Amino acid sequence: MRLRRVLQVAVVLAALVSPLAAFALTMGSVTTAPLGSAAPALAMPMLIALAMALIGFGAYRLRRRSAEAVARFALVAVLGLLAGLAYADGTITIQGTDCNMETTQPYLSSAVQTLVSLCPNPIRIVAIDPGCETPDPPVSHCIVGQSLSNGQDCILPSCS
Image (cartoon, rainbow, N blue to C red):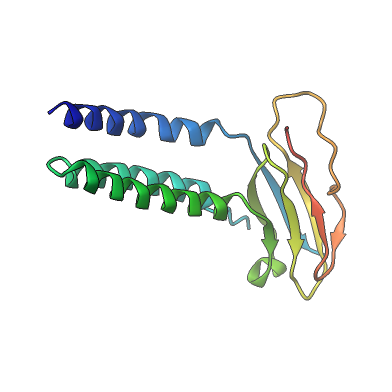
């Protein structure tokens, strides 16, 4: 009975804290266009939705299960969220249809992020917003107006 109460409290706390932690991350954005319509990536919002779905499903399905079943489900949930974080917190790659239109890509500016062009045509950086609270902009290898050819990259500004 005591283990069940602890698990219920843990699920409720996870449900309250996980969205707050995801929104507490500093987010920036970079806008690129071909040399010559924004489509934001949904990595972090989808990760938040995945966390909420796993918490809700776990709370419903595991309310009368053993501690071993709860541990197995928690392991799968944690591995899934870590895989999602690895996907969401990676290199920003411009390719495909994004090569021929202006596009805005959000990125996690509390970590070092790299912008990579895999476009057959050169692209230009139109705007960079690191989303930092400080009045001085962080130093960056990417600058507004810079053009990137196929295979070129630059490091986006980070708030760390």
